[in-house]
Length: 318
Image (tube, rainbow, N blue to C red):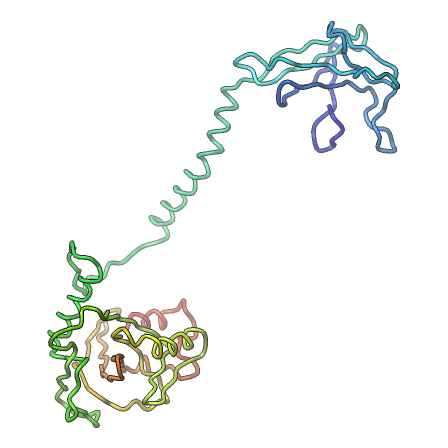
């Protein structure tokens, strides 16, 4: 059927000598039977082409120069529950029959299997992966946050107020005589975080980055696009109050502006102390985190060398 080598088109002869071919396409349609198929030069053979222009169930041959189209016309699609026709041709009597074959039910089953099996198998793969190879360990040390009906921005703002009020730190007003110049000072400074009457039109944003730019100290930790974005944020976000959390890297001298109470964190059962310093520059309040694990990185390499080992996991957890 047809001259497309990508489609099955060769009839097979059964034990009784009948040539058969299962024919499924879009209905209505036409077809021809060709004894020789394609010539060696790639053109369709015209010497023994059979059709049924008079629709009498007997194959006919017409002259190659005839203007009449010598085809078998199939105007009716297979009756339910069939989906195709089996062409059976007798090369002795040139009689042919079209017998409905195939079940629509089987086609529907295959169709729905192809539709839902990929989804079901992918879900099963994720399920088995999570329960066999993947495990999530819950943090049993941290304090879970309760649900709130307040919008995220209002809720986050209130949490920031409570956090800094608990630490007795006020970041957005600074006293000129509270600067500490010694790292061995035992007492911590009390610095204003929020003004007495906050401006409702200004937004307070809490961010944390590995690359940053402290303009008045001349400290730039910038190795890529994030460092460029950090520099742009510091210059162009003057309409917002930024609380910027940054790690102190090794080989860089960080002046101590205001000292806060250090954080004590537990990672893998080991307690680690992280010193906390604050520095105010215009609308930006830098929260500098200083610990040996942060100082192990340098200005040119602020990130851990690998992202999949235990050292990098401890680094980012801290």
